[in-house]
Amino acid sequence: MIAPRPTPHAPLREASDAARGQALDLIFIEGFTGQTVIGIHDSELHRPQTIRIDLTAGVPRTRACDTDSIRDTIDYGVVRERLQRLLAEHRLSLLEPFAEEVAGILIGEFGAHWVRVVVAKPRKFDDVESVGVAIERWRAAES
Image 1 (cartoon, rainbow, N blue to C red):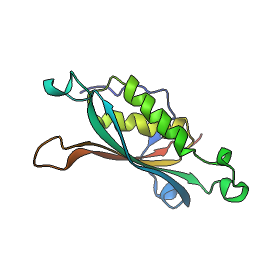
Image 2 (image 1 turned 90 degrees about the vertical axis):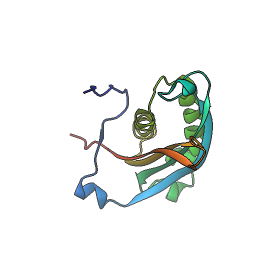
Image 3 (image 1 turned 180 degrees about the vertical axis):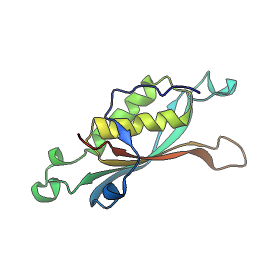
Image 4 (image 1 turned 30 degrees about the vertical axis):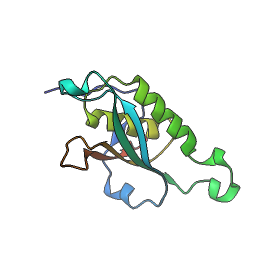
């Protein structure tokens, strides 16, 4: 069994029954695409391929509802730039830890309380539209 890779981001956990009931504002990016080297097959290891990322980040009712200021919410333009940097810098093989990394960034760097991340390889096979992984994570309860 492979030990989990430590990440510098906020701890993640599965949703508790209490946390599921919390009202959240949802910020999303749908259809982000970029090129990166990721995979386990020889054909994937030598040149970049397209991956698609859809994400939703939940935060408790944002102050931006009252202030109308981008400083009081998650700026999806900044998230987009961070995803571009991740695509260029990561050294992961599987989509699962890549999605986990995205979730950790949203929670640790952007303050999301809940995230859903979908990472897909479009047209990986001729007879399949896309393959991928979807994960949901919650910020760990504060002690």
